[in-house]
Length: 305
Image (cartoon, rainbow, N blue to C red; front, top):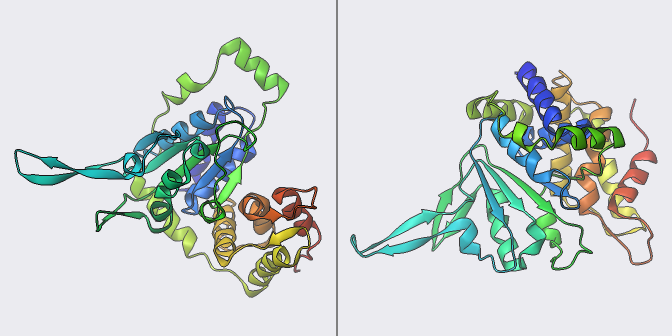
């Protein structure tokens, strides 16, 4: 199974050139059964990455373009009256897919954004009093533009906390960008990517990773990092217990990718900033952002031997 995942990562690295670290984090998020938030300027390859992930893992894909006039029913679906049967028939929305791309999520109103909350946390939606389960695996890839851009609504903390990790693709290296200029973008290549894994195999890997144990010393180290966020004078408040669980799951996924069935402090360190950074709200007097504070906490917390 690890050989397949390594092959998948190699394929994704051919789609998104020069972003091996970000590709690895995206795969970690999927294996850890989380959801990912990609924050970047338009045109950086966010949508291309999402599409390639769905194709290479053999998963059903739906895209939701978030706009200011998007309604919750446009996401979850709705019951429509059929005059022939004289009954209401449920028409599922795009949320009923294995990979859902919530494109430019912060351009929709908070009411529409909140329609994702139950789906992301519970893997189900409740429509007109009836609960409907979502397919497995279920993976939300949300993209958002920087909050200073016009027409954006900042995601509330409750929704940010639902994302296991956040990453940014950033500008490509000049040599990579030159290659794009000479050879064109890789979106056409992404459309030809073949599935290298069945959904059932991915579910099995996710279950294996979930059951990887944490040693007492690693659990203490992870908890120490979490507690430090709650004691930092740079922050309004620290992370929630959900964040600690997310950090644990991501660390296990990284350990599994490294061919280990146990977690070491280096696994926690690799995923700490992407998992915690977007959950941290700095105080008004601070000149740092969440990632800066998370990195400082990581550097100043003793590693167990």
